Image (cartoon, rainbow, N blue to C red; front, side, top):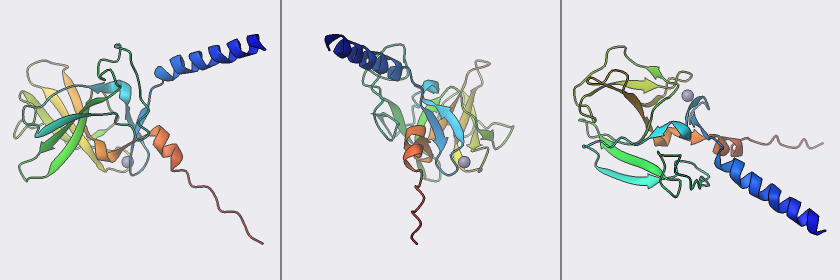
Length: 173
Ligand SMILES: [Zn+2]
């Protein structure tokens, strides 16, 4: 009996450890296409951000990683979200990622009205449904320095998308 309890205890510990290593995919809210994942999160603060705060970015909110190898997250497993405004007065809440599976609207990048000085930008679309998903920023100073600012309202995590699966109705005869 005691051996059984010890075995269950160890199974729970192993599950907690492996859960902390789980990577969460972030999907297009409209079509479910995989766009990026939380492991690609990075912190890039815009000097023009109107506001910034910490959020788990996950619908389920259970990302509780207390491990400093995740440099993009603070100790509570939260990352930085920023509120940015374009010249037309439209406001966007974004999180930044070092990698994303998106389609660029233009090959040519622009430096005008950039939110990140010394970074030129273009609009990013979901490659599957073409919804506006954010912006790509590329440094004009350091070759190979780039990141993606993605609209947090247009992302869902894969744990949330599983909850959205609609159960078929029972046939009534
Ligand atoms: Zn999509």
